[in-house]
Amino acid sequence: SEVNNLFTALNKIELRLKDRRYLVGDSITLSDIRLFVTLIRFDAVYFNHFKTNHKHIYESYCDLGQFHKVQLQFYESWE
Image (cartoon, rainbow, N blue to C red; front, side, top):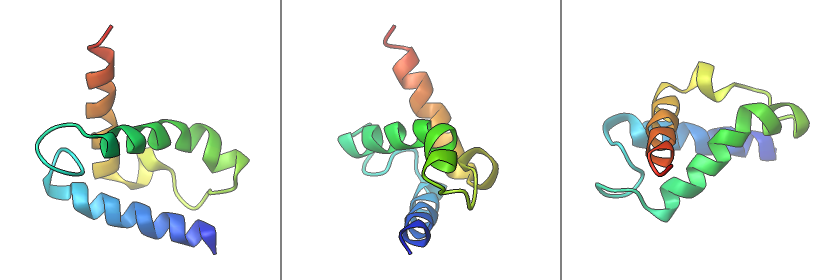
């Protein structure tokens, strides 16, 4: 199902972020921005509204959660 495909992709991204700060390279890219936008909405919107409720990002994905925190700090520093 599409939900299973989503969580398979999240698992792959989690593994990729295990030993790196960004998805590609040593600095933020458009891929990081797009992932951040998805993650920031995931638990609040997708989890309930779109029934992608297998796992919460903040509870189940340590490296995605850390990525989210780093990106949030990056965007907050622009203010």
